[in-house]
Length: 153
Image (cartoon, rainbow, N blue to C red):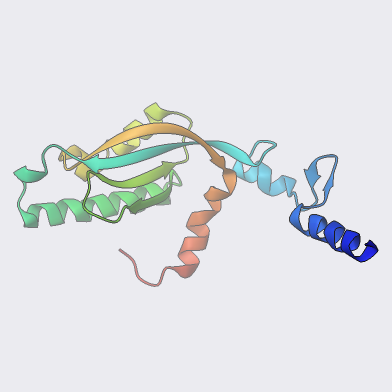
C-alpha cells in the first residue's frame, strides 16, 4: 500500500509543476515583461481570418500570381515591423483561406495593416478581425521560425 501511495504522489508531482504561492518555479519575470504578458502569461492579439474575396474571378491566373507575390511580400514587411506574429493558409480550397495573428492593441490598427495587403486591395482576399487572448509566448515564434526556415517564400 505504501508503494502505491508513493507512486501516486510521485505521479502527481510530475503532472503538476511545483509552485510557490501559485507561481511557477520556471517563471521568468524579464521575459514576461519583454513579451507584455499578464500574470497568466497571456496578452491580447488580433486574429484576421482570411476569406476568398468577391473579385477573384476578375483576374487572370497570371494577375493572381502577381497579387499573391505582393501578398507574400506584405507578410514579410509586416513581420519585419514586428506586427505580424503568425500567418499561414488553411489546407483545402474553401472560402476560409488562412489566418494572421497581429501584435496590435486594437482591431482598428489590425485593419489598417490588412488594408496594406495587395490581395485585400485587389478584392482577392477579405478579412474578418477578432480580438483574442492568447499566450504571450507566441511572440517568440518569428525568432524560432527563422531558425528552422530553410527557404524564403
